[in-house]
Length: 188
Image (cartoon, rainbow, N blue to C red; front, top):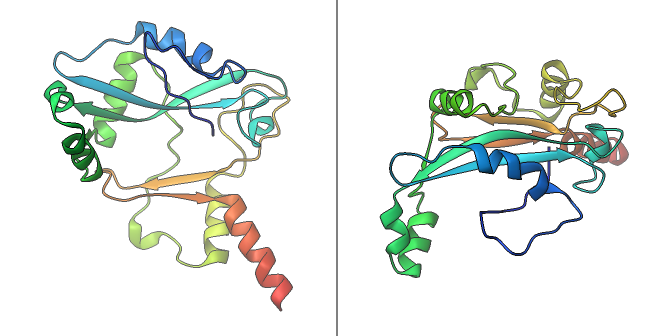
């Protein structure tokens, strides 16, 4: 997926050409606020024809989709701190990001589709070599699971690998592994 653009009620500046704000506005207007503090929803908007170079893999037209991939909670008092303390809090990992189980519950409660979950794999079973990771990607995701119409190209961008507690997060991208393998082949 790709393309991100922030928006909050009352925002005055955004890139209207991409359509991201218009695609997310109905969701932003219907989701409920937490009882205490601030909840930040991290969504990825994909498709369209101008969001990223991969847009055509999700739609043959201009349709936009979105998927939730993370949620954080912030104590409202944090925003009253001096700017330097807020930056330090942020840089030091002060945000509370929900666990996989909590994220799934919030998505269901708010009726927001999650980015697809593919499998649970023990860390010791993840490939460590370039060729092996390319095979792993192809085995677990040979075509996108979020095509928006039948005319989508269908080639996936990659897989996000993360532990349930979010202590480790990485993205394995097809393009990176393919490029590395091509460079190796040229050097031989």
